[in-house]
Image (tube, rainbow over all chains, first blue to last red):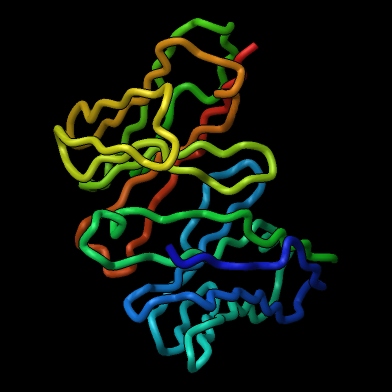
Length: 114
Length: 114
């Protein structure tokens, strides 16, 4: 299975943009890139996902490299509430059953300074 | 609309005791999942269900049994608890029609086995 690599931790200042990187050099052509985040003492929550094109939603933007070997989650204006662990996950779409599953790594711990 | 609920929120067990964790969702989702999260780690999939009456093994199934009681409820049972099962347990559910593949997570159950 293709794996992702993320920095263990990052820091940001409140109201500044944050760029969270993710490397996935062994991604296959049909793997989707998903981002979840986990606020302290809570379950994970979905942030955004994409396949090839950049994506925007109310929470964040996802920039996917042209070769798809890396992606970046962009929080346009970080708030204290965005302090969380951010997980970059590849979702496989083969027919072997793994389409049902997400594999979480250790993620990136984002600290937001006031 | 409560989303995904889990009971209990906390539990302390002695080695060898048994217990059942219960998950319920009110979103009419087909897929349900049980994960565990150890300190400083990502989530690992224990078992999952793709519909009523079905269950399947995940990444770390040993020592756990599950039952999809009906479409709403998915239980996780520890028959003989061990200290290695000390963890936070998360339940999640997903709609088969969801284009985002978004999994909705419960608040977690913190289990300590002494």
